[in-house]
Length: 39
Image (cartoon, rainbow, N blue to C red; front, top):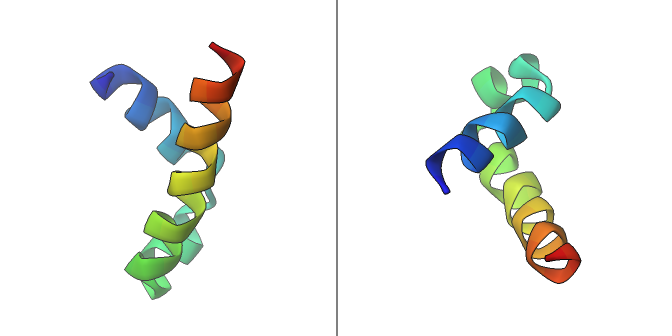
C-alpha cells in the first residue's frame, strides 16, 4: 500500500505539493479511489 502511495505522488507535480499541501491530498484521494475501483 505504501508503494502505491509513493507512485501516486510521482503523478502529481511537485510544484503543487510545495505550494499547497492540501492540493496533494485532494488529488491523491480520487487516485486511490480509482485504483480500488480498478482492483
